[in-house]
Image 1 (cartoon, rainbow, N blue to C red):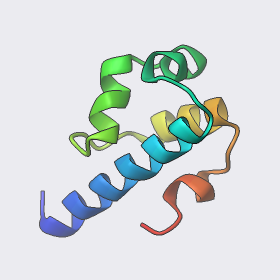
Image 2: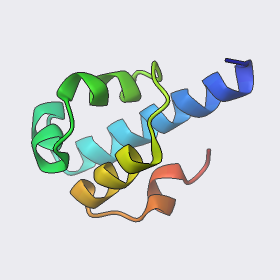
Image 3: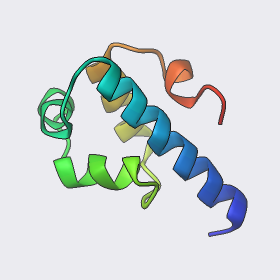
Length: 74
């Protein structure tokens, strides 16, 4: 993975964490809402994994935001 990709994943993780915390959700609560593994969400927030598009859509649906809101500023 190159530096640009790492930067995007780090920013995506920070944005996801911000949106989750804005709604006062724990990782476990977001995992339950999105039907995703809490460890996966933690790795996304840490910028350690590149989530598939279906994972992105599960997260935005669970948060009630648009995909654009999640990726804004990346």
